[in-house]
Length: 66
Length: 226
Image (cartoon, rainbow over all chains, first blue to last red; front, side, top):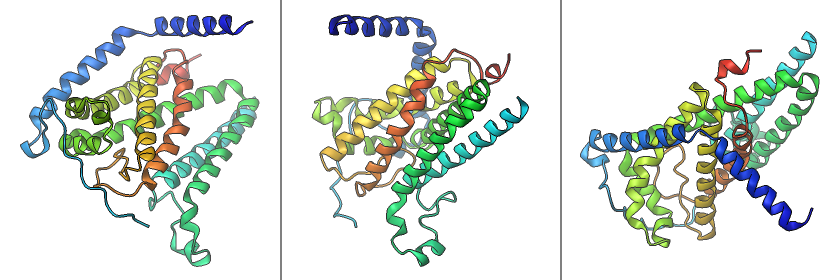
C-alpha cells in the first residue's frame, strides 16, 4: 500500500470513528458545562468571580528555586 | 479457570497500587503513598528525594509489565478490570482536579494567564471564559466517564483535554515560564519542576484514555455483565 493510500485509509478510519461518536451527548454536556460555568461565576463571591471577557495579570517570575 | 482469574486479579491489584504510587511519586510528593521523601529513607540515602520521578516511572513500568501476564492468564477478566480501573481512576482524577477551580474561578483564571498562551495567540480575552468553562468540562466529563455508559464520548473529550494540558505544559517549559501546573491546587508561580512532573504524568495517562476512547459504550456495571 502506497503512502497516499495509507493516508486515505487513516483519514477514512478517523472519519468513521468520529461518526461513531454520540455528538448529541458530547455537545449536550458541553452546553450544560457552559451554562453551569455562567451560574458558578454568578454564585461565587465577588472576589472569586471573573469578568466574562478578559484576562488576568501576568505575575513576576519568581527567582530560581533550588 | 477460577485460579487464573484470582491470579489475574491479584496481579492487576498490585499493578493498580504501583500506578497509584507512581503517580504520587511523580506528582504528589509528601503524600501518604510516596516513600522517596520518608525520613527513614532519607537517613539511609540523603539524596533519595531527587529520584522521585525515576521511582514513579519505574513503578508505572512495572505496573504495565504486570498487565501482560494478567491479560494472558484471563484475557476477558483483565480487559474488564482494566477498563473499570481506568474509568474510575481517570474520571476520579478529573473530578478531583476540577473542584478547587470551580470554587475559585479568579485564582484559576490568574493561573491560566501565567501560561501566556492566549496572549501569544492574541486572544487574551478568552482567558477568563476558558477558566470558567474548562473546570466544568473536567467535572462533568469525569462524572460521565464513571456514572454513564458514554465511555467513548467522555474519553474522547478527556483525551483532548490531556492534549491541551500537554501543549500548555510544553509551552510553559519551552518558554521557561517557571509556573505551577495548576492541575490540582492553586499556588503562586513556582519553579518549573512541577511543570515537568505534570507533563510526564499527563504523557502517561493519555494512553489509557485513548484506549478507553475506543471501547464500546457500557456502564461500569454493564462491563461485568455477560
